[in-house]
Figure 1 (cartoon, rainbow, N blue to C red):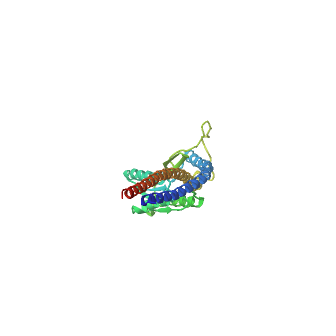
Figure 2: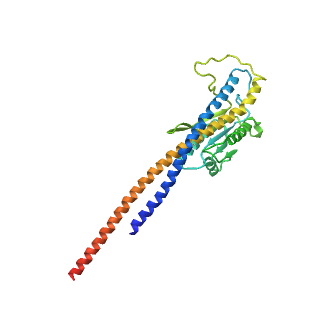
Figure 3: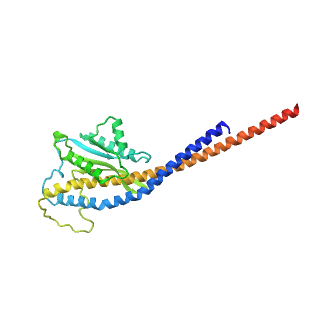
Length: 297
């Protein structure tokens, strides 16, 4: 076997090994995406219900609760970006980080100071590489987040929002995550969790809403009890959405990588066959030339 042909065969074997890895990662992502979608669907009703409850209390009570009012004693704003722990998921993490950078630029133009939080090794590495301080960071389980991690993140953000200004309190909480729409559609989104600004799902279309409510023990007490649960539910829902998006992106990226590996293998196979044919032709030419030389002598 000639040197050139040997190089092509070696590259074919290397690409075949990579193809097996890509195929395995694609199958793993495909096997986990179903459960991730089920978790997104299961968490949706509770998140929606508690948001409706919060909205109802805020609308139908006359109190000026700090969790529904704009803070004016600080210009700090908390931003949590949700990314992946590992690569090979296409532009999933890059899109989320890029969206968080756009949000950061907009907030800074408004004269606000961003306090950065990060979930996932890709985002943590991104900010560390740029020597940016992180007020909080969480890694591990980005494609299968657990309730405990979501509660830890939510409690840290809630504590920052309720802290006094001289202790690092923030006026707003934003989260940048990737919303899972379908297997072929996932988009980064920005949600302002606090203070509550959007009336979300207070009434379904065609559903009557009573104009007044009575709250026990008080509207403020109800809000104090609901808000920690609200933040936990919303954070957990965003993590689940991002996990499903990560797996969908990884499955699609690995499928593309397998196809590219097959194309490379076919290309190198043709080149190896051409090199082999050229070597055979060269050997035949040498034999014929040698026979002619012997006949002439």
